[in-house]
Structure formats: structure tokens, C-alpha cells
Amino acid sequence: MKNTKLFGRIVCLILAVVMCLSLAACGEAAPAATPEPTAEPTPAPETLAAEAEELFYKADYTGAFEKLDALETSGITSVQELLGTSYYFGLGVEADSEEAVAQLTKAADQGDAIAMYLLGNACATGTGTSRDEAKAKEMYAKFIAVGEADSGENADSGRIQAYLADCYAYGKGTDKDIDKAAAAAGKAASADLTAFDMVKLAGSYVEGVFTKTDETGDTAEADAAAAEVTAEGEDETESETPVIPAEAEELYAKALDSIKTLADAGNVKAKKALGDYYFGGYAGVAQDYAKALELYTEAGEKGDADAQAQVGYIYQYGCGIDPDYEKAMEWNNRAAQQGNAQGQAQIGWLYQQGLGVTQNLDEAGRWYTRAADQGNKWAEARLAETEATNPQDLFEAHA
Image 1 (tube, rainbow, N blue to C red):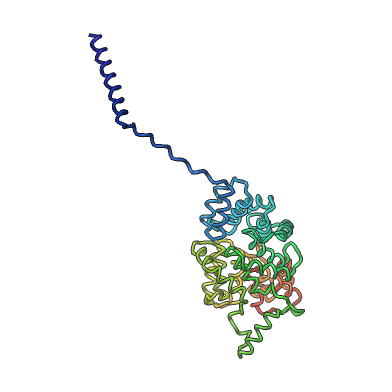
Image 2 (tube, rainbow, N blue to C red):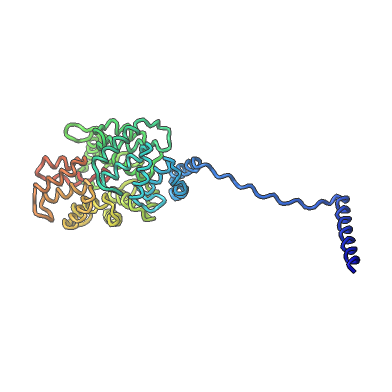
């Protein structure tokens, strides 16, 4: 019985071998195994960093941040700077001033110019760190030294020039030098800038800080504009819409769509910037003080000191509304406590005039001094005067 079973197995084995040989003889080969798919090589961190930088300067902040965030531990300087910038302005991510300072510090320690400038701003205003004027001046000075050596061929060269213009215009970390400020501004105006940088640069043109002044402090550009208005039979002091330099108008127009998009998404700094458009009637936006107040208030409630000072300004001087000096003092104080020079100067004016508070020239002088120490020219002038000036001269939204 056992032999029979064994014999049967042998027969089956022989038949199987014969069938395989027959198939081979007929040219029918067994199907080949499917090859394993080849995995795409992971791009080098430097390549991803370059892609993120390109997206950032194309204003695709969300796409840029996704790549930057994945590279946070790479140690690449440009990644740390752009992460810091993104957190600082709330580009592609919710603004986080403390995280911004942390990332910018890493980049600044590796010699990044933009990080040095933004850290100077953070230290000067107490944004994400304690206020430290000495540290701010140190960072500004370091930025200027590195920024002046920029070749002008890098992706961030435009921003460097814009920030150099700001430093020379307002004496941040250096003596004021309008010639150097104007030269840097000219280079920056045609470069790739963030919408916020465009608005800041445009605001400086509006304030006339890149225009040489004569001994009286009047700008040649302003004189020409006033003469033109007068020739048309209008009184320039009654004009509600200021003459906007062509350079500023172009920058405001380029930035507008991005500012609107960011503001609609809840970006605090964009709300403040859009408020400036409505306040000043820039880039074809109809002047609307009520809309400006709404946007400034929204940004101010989120802690933006510049917006708080503008809310104070509108209540103080009754822009489109009746003056409300108590509200003006409230909002000015909120801005001033964050080191905002405009808010400090406006408090000085309220004390000088005795509006909403008991008149106190000594207290006025103290507030003017705080603002003047930060380069606020209106406050500097008020220290030498006992009478109020035209309130429109106070507006330094971009200083």
C-alpha cells in the first residue's frame, strides 16, 4: 500500500516536470515580476529653502511657510530669517511676536541683515521682547554695516534697501542722512518687497522724509505742490486730501491687493495698513475716516500700537467725527505704553492744551521729550513752542 502511494507521487512529479518542459519548448515563459517603483529622491534642504524663498517673494506666503516650517531645524539662515519675518508680520501663519524674535535671533547671530533690522524694531517697541533702546540701536547699527555691503543681487536686496532708507531717514542706529535715505529708497522702490514694506516706504515718501528741507523745515516738493494748488484758485489749508508723491502712489497701488487680501484674512498689520489707505485716500481708495477708524480700532484691540495711536488721533482731532478727548487719551495711552512715539506726542499735546485733562506744560514736555527721543519731529518742534500747531502736521503713521 505504501509502495502504491509512493509510486503515485512519483508519477505526479514526473508529469509536472514534463509539462514545464513542454511550455518552455513552446516559448511560453513565466510572467516577469513587476519591478518595485523607484522612490523620488528627497530634494536637498538648500533646494527646498530656495523654493520657499521664491514663493515668499511671489507673495505666496502660505506655500512659503509650509516649506519653511518643515525646514525649521535645518539651520539655514534664510529659513530662520523668513520664518521670523512670517511670524513678525503674520504672513502665512498667525502672528507670533515671541516666536518671531526667537527665529530672527538665530538668523541675526549668523549675520543676516534683515533679521538684525527687525530685531532692532522689536527691541525699540517691545514687540516679542522687553523694550531695550540700547539693544535696538546696536542691532540697527549692525544691520547698516551688513546692509551697506549687500551686493544688490540677492532676493532680499530690495528689503535691505528699504530698511536702510528707514534707518537713514529716521536716524536708527546712525545719524540721519536724507541723501543716503533717498538713494536706498530709489533702489528699493523697484525691487521685490512685501506689501508691508511697500506701504512703509510709501508712507515715508508721503511724510517727505526723502526730500531735502530748507532752514524753515519746509520741503521744496511741498512748496511746489502748494503753489500749484494756489494757482488753481484753492486754499491748500482747506484741502482734505494731501498731495501724494508719485513714488508713494505707485507703491501704494502695488501693495493694495495684497493688503486687502491679508486684512480680509484677519492680519492685524494689514488692517492697520488698509486703514491708512482710507485715512489718506491712497491709490484711488476714497477717503473714509469712518472706515479708517473701524480698521484701526480692530487692529488696535489686537495690540497694534500704530493703530492705537491712529485711533487716538482721529478722536483727538475729530476726523469725520466730533472730538472725544477722553477716548483720545485712552487710545494714545495704550499706544504710548508700548513705546509708540506718535501716541506719546499726542498725549503731550492734550496736556499742553488742557483737553480732556488739566493743562500741565511740564507733563506735556515730558511726553514730548519721550517722543522726540525717538525722532518724532513734531514733538521736537513742540518742545520749543507754547502754542499748538496745525494738527495735520502730527500724522506720522509710518515713522
